[in-house]
Length: 192
Image 1 (cartoon, rainbow, N blue to C red):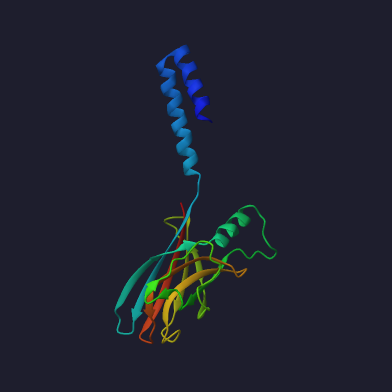
Image 2 (cartoon, one colour):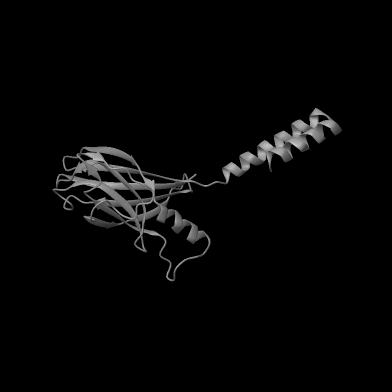
């Protein structure tokens, strides 16, 4: 509805039935606006990294990610049934790299990116699940074991779709992987 239409309708209501109808109309307009705002679904991703050391100690690191344009396109294609045969718009792996930081400072991830900043060092399959306490949240879990990626400063990662596109990615300060640590990544994508 345009502002002029609302103003004209408000003037007519005021003239005809007084202020009570005007207040009811304004209240309905606010309810419609709030309902429309709630139907705009946004996605948000966070990553929890559990660093487990051989001595039994552990630490937890938290990162935010960027949902990439290709990821948003995959969602739109999926819900409009504009999909390939066989279906390949699902997350099937996490990819890790070493070019996501410069001097230890994470690089900015623009949503138009289509891949990691550097070559993929490691690709790991994911276990996918739905958070039962928050059913609009998908969780993707992967583990880099004590024997993998040792001697590398990990600082970028992405969620890779079966079709090869990166759904979302993030960069983080250098995480120097050694044989004394195992990394468990829980990547949560929430639809708000």
